[in-house]
Each structure stands twice: as structure tokens, then as C-alpha cells.
Amino acid sequence: MASGKHFKYVILGGGVAAGYAAREFAKQGVQPGELAIISKEAVAPYERPALSKGYLFPQNAARLPGFHVCVGSGGERLLPEWYSEKGIELILSTEIVKADLSTKTLTSAAGAAFTYEILLIATGSSVIKLTDFGTQGADSNNILYLREIDDADKLVAAIQAKKGGKAVVVGGGYIGLELSAALKMNDYDVTMVFPEPWCMPRLFTADIAAFYEAYYTNKGVKILKGTLAVGFDANANGDVTAVKLKDGTVLEADIVVVGVGGRPLTTLFKGQVAEEKGGIKTDAFFETSVPGVYAIGDVATFPLKMYNELRRVEHVDHARKSAEQAVKAIKGKESGESVPEYDYLPYFYSRSFDLAWQFYGDNVGETILFGDSDPTSSKPKFGSYWIKDGKVLGAFLEGGSPDENKAIAKVAKTQPTVASVEELKEEGLQFASKI
Image (cartoon, rainbow, N blue to C red; front, side, top):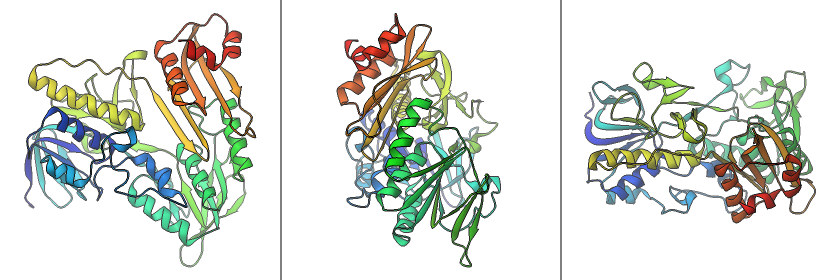
């Protein structure tokens, strides 16, 4: 048995939530040696969204240490030295293979045992792979995924090795859209393939999606909807050469990038803690059914106060905020100070090419589209509102200024009543700036 260590607080996972939790611990006051982060990644916590954006730019690409947390939200950049100065132990390249919540023990692949008094589960998600479904040829070389910096490095190497080649992007969500844009910027011939009737179907309406699909098409990205990759051809070296689609189409490919979603990493805790909606169930302070064990970020299913329901949110904004909330609650319990319940306004955003959109609230009810959604405009600016029971519950804006984005966030937060949907369509963004 390799020797382990005892810590008062252990954060399991080394992503965005872990980094923001460490910063909050430092802010609240933590003694040297009390806190450890155990991460299977080889680097200190970083802003994961950079991997699908700046990391893949053909010029002036983002690289570490440039995007360690907490620069993504305008905060201080926490370099590895920051952790040692604060007496926070960064235990990197360490995979935990067993967690026993009854004895408060985590065991690593190398056999080291780490014990804790308070645990924060910040394990995030793992990427869903086509090999998980047994897709024929899915283990060929240059079929790539994106979750961690290692994945991003493999993708960058492949992009450089196959310069000017053909790329097929499987999936029409965030990763699919952002990576199609990145590959196009790297002078690739790009085809996107996804089974749904339009891109980003969990959030976008048909109208919103039509703008992005036309914009991408104008940039030279080919989009094939309503079909799936069912197999891959490879050459004698095992490198992928073609993608076979369900409709019989065969696409030549030098690189395939797959973005078909993630799964929350909760396996270590199965049967030890209450689960709900695919995640670990928590209260408004991110404490689980096991006292002293907290879950934050992608893995937490928490009470979304605004909508009076339990939700799991896979987004960087919630990873940051849930981390801060959990640490405040832990420290509040120790000092006897009460902490307000988590009151989260769902927020999603994406950037690609010269585009940038933001969404706030809940995408339920009927929708209206306003503004200039002509994909050939030099500066398109348009949005949508989601209206249910006479109230605006969700708001989306492409091309908004910081103030305009704040205005639509306020709409989603305050849920103003709407007398006439027609008037709202006429008013568009003006409606938001009045609130």
C-alpha cells in the first residue's frame, strides 16, 4: 500500500469547479496543509472552454499557463505556485479508483489512500465515445474527442499533420459548432453531421438554428442533418479515411471530431449517495445525502429555486458559482454564519467565427424572433424570447453588447408579464432595456 495523506478538506477533480473552490477556500481562510485537490489531469485547474475556442486558433492560440482559473471570469490567474503559497496541496496525475464515504477514504490507482473530513466531489463529465456504442471502426486513429487538455493537444497535432485536409465533425451541439468553426479557420474542408433536424436542438428553436446553419454554410461548412455516422474506414496504418453515414453517404476524412455529449462522472459514489436526474442529489448548499460530502459543477443535481425543480446544469458558469456556494456553506457551518440558498439563473453562451450568443433563463413556452437575423448581414444582431403563461421566461441574444446581454439576463430573472406577443416582437431588444 503506497502511503496516503489526511486532509481536512479534499476536492476530488481538477477542473473549473475545483479551481474556483480552491480560490474561495483561500478567500475564506484555510490553514496550510488543510486542503488538497486530487486531479487525474497533469496540470493545475484551467478554464476548460478555451479548449474548443482559443486553443485551436491558427494564430495566437491560447496556451497554458495563460488560461488557468480564474481568468475566464476576469479573476486572478492561479498558477501552480499560488497553491503552494497558500499551502494547498495539488495532487496531480492521480486517478482515484475507489471512494468509501463511510470511512472517508479515497484510493488511487497507485494504491495510495487519502482520508478527509469534508469532501467536495468535482469530478465533472467524461466524454461519450462512439466506441461506447461499438460503432464499426470507431477505434481508428484521428477520430478525436475534446474534454481535457490532452485531447486538445492531440487535436492540435492532428490539425497540423493533416493541414488543408478534410474534417468530419460528428455532433451538432456546442462542441460540433465550435470545432467546425475552428477547423474551418485552420483551412479544413469541413462537414458537420448530426441526427437532429437542426443544430443545438436542446436550446435553439428552428428559427435560431436556421441563422447559424446558413452562416456556417456561407463560411463553407457543409451540414448534413438527420443522419448518423454508422462506421469508419481506415487505411493499413489504422488512420481513418472515411465516414460511413446511415443514409449510405460516404465522406472522405483525414480527421474526425466527435462531440456527442458527456456523462457525469458519478460511478465512484454509486449506492453510497442519493442520485437524481443522472447526477448526485444535493441541497441548496450542494451538500449531498451524506453529511460533509458536497457535489459541485456537472455532477450536482440541485434545487433550481427560480423554477422550483431539481436540475443538473452542465456549464462553466454554474461550475464556478456552485463551487463558491459550497465552500461558503462549509465555512459558514464552521463559523455558525448562515449562507443564502443558491439562486441560480441558467446561463449559456457560445462563440465561433465572429459570432457570440448568450441565453438566460428557461427555454419553455412559445417563442418570438426579433432583430436582424439575416446571416449575410455585416453585423447580425437578433434574439428570441420564450413566453409561458403570459411571462417571459427565457431570452437569447446574438451579437449583443455587454449592456444588452445584462438587459436580457434581467428579463429572464424578473420574468416580466407580456400583454401582447405581437407588441413584444415589435419592441424586441427595447423591451429588455426598459426593465
